Length: 93
Image 1 (spheres, rainbow, N blue to C red):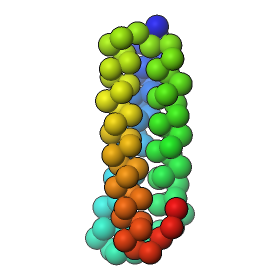
Image 2 (image 1 turned 135 degrees about the horizontal axis):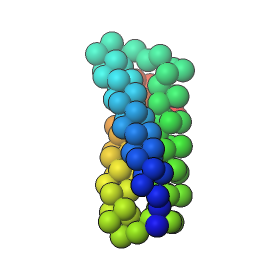
Image 3 (image 1 turned 45 degrees about the vertical axis):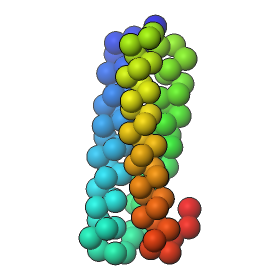
Image 4 (image 1 turned 180 degrees about the horizontal axis):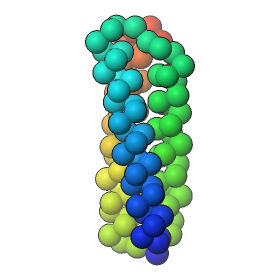
């Protein structure tokens, strides 16, 4: 079973990563231009967080795995949105 502290820390990491990535998504949508470094960094953070969730799932109990699964879905959805937004703007990732 994953410890309460490790789950709390990961949950905070997920929330921070999502907040940052959503900021980048909104900025790129409004401005129709990209800060390539921040945009790419947001994608990298999403991927790293996704991997951290997958790692944590190995030591999680049932309810924790369910929570981690929901987090993973949020991350994937945001990754897809950023990638699609980037492809509309001519960016290639």
